Image (cartoon, rainbow, N blue to C red; front, side, top):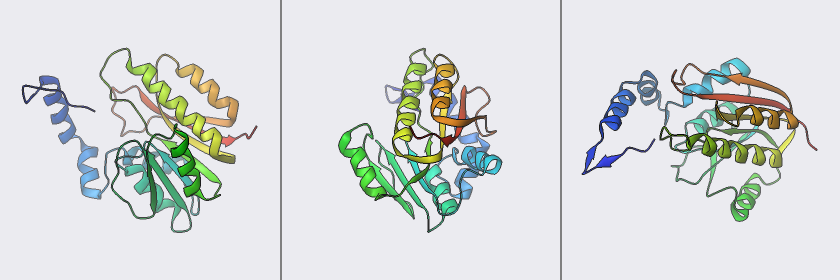
Length: 213
């Protein structure tokens, strides 16, 4: 989330957000456990319920910065697996994680990702991408656009019966997006981890059984 500053001072809403953030139990746990963000616990809860990661898998993490999902994925797939992370933003290096910085919509970046995979079939694409939320009506279209990008990428790289985990926001376009996923996958589950803030419209869709056309 971007923090608004006026005359070198935080606005009142930003102060409230910062205070809530620092007092958040998952933020404190992430600092203690060595994860880069509280988002780690969302993925850990989904993993506990759905067992989507397995040793030896090849995983692509879209919108990976600052890297908490990649941290978890690398640990769970082990040394025989592979985690390929990508983000427009910089991300500090992580053990057993290959990082490609850039916009994966661009051909040279996409080709770089494919070159890094070096022919490995992708078992799972995960995406925790979201726009900077400003609390206005323009956020939902931007959020769904990122979801569309992630789905398109997954359709291009997943092997048959592969899986796709994506963060979505309930609202305009959500139902249509679920239908689009079902066109390409045989199963779809909805998840709202406890680490997701109660007031947030975010949830996660886990698609299984990719149908190669």
